[in-house]
Image (tube, rainbow, N blue to C red):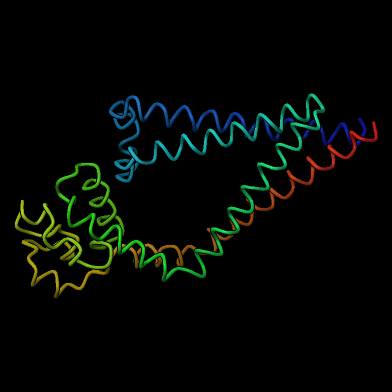
Length: 237
C-alpha cells in the first residue's frame, strides 16, 4: 500500500466516523423535538440539566447537520478522488476553524461587552417572562440551582417578575436555599449572578476547555492538510 492510498483510506475512515457521529447527534436532536417526554423518561435521571433539552435539541440538530456535511464531503471526496468535493471539504472546515478562532478572540477580548449585551437583553426578559414562560422559567431554575446563582447579575433581575408576583418570594437559590426568600434576605445572602458564576466555572475548567479546543483545532488543521495533500496529488495522477 502506497502512502497516497494509506492517507486516502485514513481520510475515508476518519470522515466516515464524523458522518456517523453527526447522524447520531441529528437523530437524537430530532427525537427530542418530536418526542421530548420519552427522551426524558429514558435519560432524565442522568442529570437535572436535561430539563433544558428543548433548547439543546436544536443545538444537536445544527451540530449534527454540520458534521454530516463535513463527513460526507471528506469521505466521498477521498473515495471518488474528487477535487471538487475535497476543495469543498477544505473550505467548510477552514470556515469553521476561522469562526472558532474569531469566537475565542471575541470571548477573551470582549467579555465586558458580552456582559453588557446580556444585561441589556436577558435582564429585561427575566423581568417580563420568568415565572410566566414555562420553558424560560425551567431553564433558569435549573441554571440557578446548578450554579448556585441568582438572576443574571443578582436577585434584582427577578424583581417585578411574574414569579415574584405569583409566589411573593424569590427562588430559593437567591437566598442560598433559605425560605421564605424575601428581598431583605436575598440582599443579605448576596448570591452572585449566573453570568459571573458561569465565568468562574469556565475559568476553573480553563485547562480542560483549552485542551479540548486545542485538540479540535489540531484535528481540523490535520484534516485540511490531508485534504489539500490529496487534492494536490490528484493533479500528479
